[in-house]
Length: 93
Image (cartoon, rainbow, N blue to C red; front, side, top):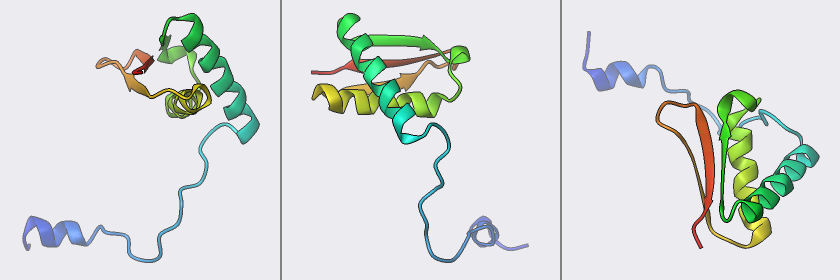
């Protein structure tokens, strides 16, 4: 049977590493979404909250929110609520 470590080692993928394939929006869509979120951050006095049910891909939204922070030149934080129903971004500057 072996130890847990020996058993788990059998599931390790060996070989050269490659970057994961893009999962969602193309570059122009990601840029458009980032600009939209940046505008919302400014209008919302530093924070935006969205329902996850409204979003096609939560991870894409969070990536765009981080890009929005770079566009604005501010440090931001993104997160998902504990129950998974909301995603948020906040300006930490």
